[in-house]
Length: 233
Image (tube, rainbow, N blue to C red; front, side, top):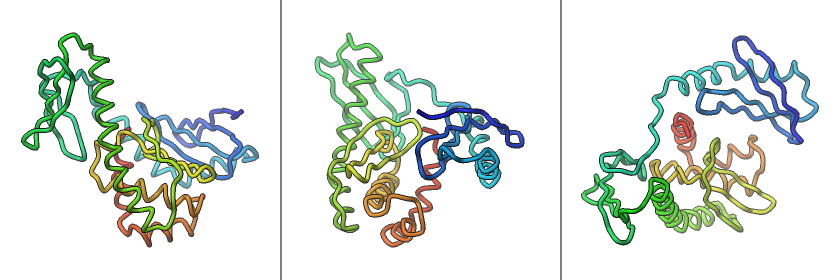
């Protein structure tokens, strides 16, 4: 059971969670830039303050960006909306049809054919199923490609919507999770996350060995990481 408390560091309100973990983690959470720090159970408050001070400029930058960034309005899945797919912006056109289906036309439109009785929730559910299928297609190509390059084999690769992570890995179970939102981003970002999680099958921690492996397999990974971190999930 995690212990939770709030401490102040300069002008920051920091939500501290003490858990049975080995390393500390800092997150700036949407929608208002809540600062969350997870630390090992025996970490004293003074050490937590030093951690936050060390990353103070980074935290402030992301809090500011998150609070100032224009929030995308809730999707209604109607004609005229903008939707992103594989890093490109498309306009949605909705047309009635007996059976739902989605097609991309002229490299700029997503045609969404839906039964007239479909509610917004039914449209959303169908659209996200389509995104999931498209992401699965990408994973079926990219994961084997990088498994061969890196020399590892994941037992299972799953897709789910995540609020604070683009991907995650359970090295013991050799299971990898990929965020559904990545199908909306440029393909190279998806590849970066795949490589990142596969490298964790060799090295669990974010340490010197891990970063050396990342540099070996994907020399531009730092650029992709920075660009992904600039997006708000």
